[in-house]
Image 1: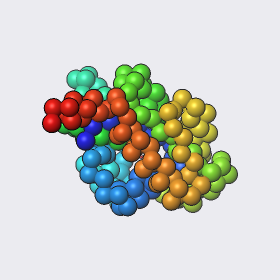
Image 2 (image 1 turned 90 degrees about the vertical axis):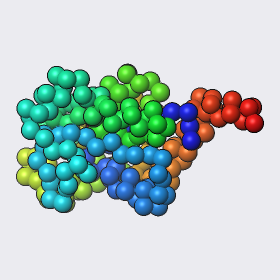
Image 3 (image 1 turned 180 degrees about the horizontal axis):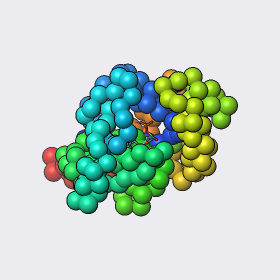
Image 4 (image 1 turned 60 degrees about the horizontal axis):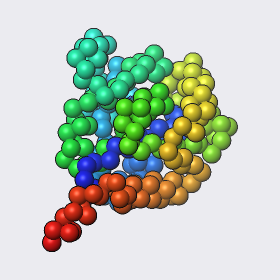
Amino acid sequence: MTDRGILFVFSGPSGSGKGTILSNYFEKYDDQNIKYSVSATTRAPREGEVDGVNYYFISTKDFDNMIKNNELLEWTCYCDNKYGTPLKAVTKMLDNGTDMLLEIETEGAVNVKKMYPDAVSIFVLPPSVTELKHRLTGRATEEKDVINKRIQTAIKEIGMADQYDYVLLNDSLDSAVEGFRAIVMAERFKTNNNKNTISEVLKK
Ligand code: 5GP
């Protein structure tokens, strides 16, 4: 275990496959030392989404109260809905040595990097814009104007990929999962994250 948990920030446009990469990662590696931060949102749940698992689905009033009470590590407005990372849960886990994974959009990611320069940011790229459009249209859980808005937002987000520490091209799910594993492991072995381990070894 590293001295303190590592804060991983994971972004990628809607349709980039970032959720699938993460679910495959956890299925394949059963990595107990990294936990997914559950965000709060004012967006309505999609079919199959569970409150407290995918998101905390809350009202705009409750969300605004969280902002007012400094309960959010970061927050943003995305496609007319608010999304934010609950602060306490994240810092508590990091203090306990557990790595945390924030799956958030680009604006939030850039803000997190400013506040926590040691955070490790990863951007998932779809193979192409054409493929992205295809995936978003095929999802068909949303109205056409919502889909079009997401496509425009996605293109804008890809333009911010160069501000991230790592880029994962999701042209094959397996290689993207392996890429994510490689990043997580390399970060865990960094000297800066293991100063306590060095002194512990010297004491023995
Ligand atoms: P969706 O509505 O598709 O679940 O999420 C829309 C976007 O909001 C995604 O890019 C997702 O990563 C991002 N998002 C989810 N939770 C948060 C959060 O707590 N903060 C920020 N900044 N973005 C979030």
